[in-house]
Length: 434
Image (cartoon, rainbow, N blue to C red; front, side, top):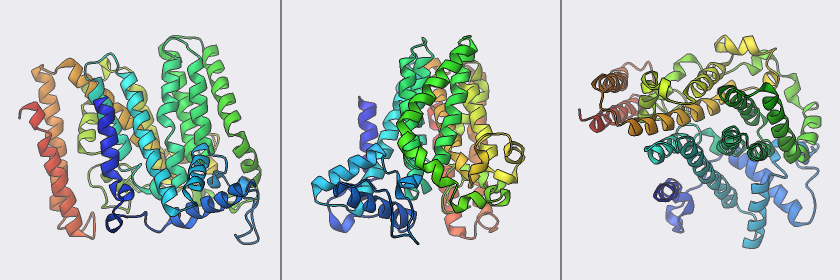
């Protein structure tokens, strides 16, 4: 209960400028996709629904378009309907109403991620701490607090990952198939949220995770087939009202004519430095998982044999990272014509969604294991210290790079980031008594 209370307090502190009643201190989300698209869509949706009409057609864009078929309009997404209902009771639609919807999705994600990692580590003494560590990385790292805030459909589609994974995890512990209904429902909500690419990532993740769990439990592949069928039927049933017009509309949009060159964009390789120097290579740093999170990940090689599920989440993170480079790396071109659905989407850097969440879950598992084993072995301690020293040196290198202009034209900003990262790395030595 204390851990959940802490997550609530952290959420209030993070979004306090959206929540404060003091007008002079209030802040709003900057102009961009949020204001130019999502607020506009939701306002039109509010107008139609509060007048007792289903928003079938939008007459205000060009010559008009089928509003209900635009997936990013999220016409029937249940949390959006709740926002509209509460706004109606409060006196009308406002910009702030959608900001609160965004903020509450971050809160919901953090609580569901905590529940997932807590359940995965329930037999360990460090379960609460591990769940908190993984939740903080996933909820307040570079991905969820970056561009998904502006591109609201990405954030809301991503929110349901922990609940969907929890459903698969619980279903395969003792073959309790009812939990797969929860996984299918969460996946269906993701598809209704309005960003098919993010939901496509989640669909493949759940398929792979169910296969891994079935294999680890030495169950027959017929169990896998039944499980996938059940998840698909539930998710498809939940989201059909959104997907059926969406698929029909897709064949008539400009996206159909996008070529491989237009869809192959992704991170340049130097963006991997986002892991240490956020905000220096681009406006957003979706790969950033924090210095402590990075240290925990690098400790994994000495713990993976005693850490259930670590191999799966490591492979997901690596595959997703390679995909996030798009045509800059070999994996995306190799899978472009083979992996169903891949050729429908542009912006391959959005695979950071899977990278960060996989690493956050891994970090939570590792933190729980470290506390559970009460690390006293001198060899293990020396290995952990080497990781800490290596990352501290890596962070410190940014201080030297700040004067060269190679990493960032804003030398003062890089220097501030490098110094702060180095200080965090230095503080991490304290728990090990160095």
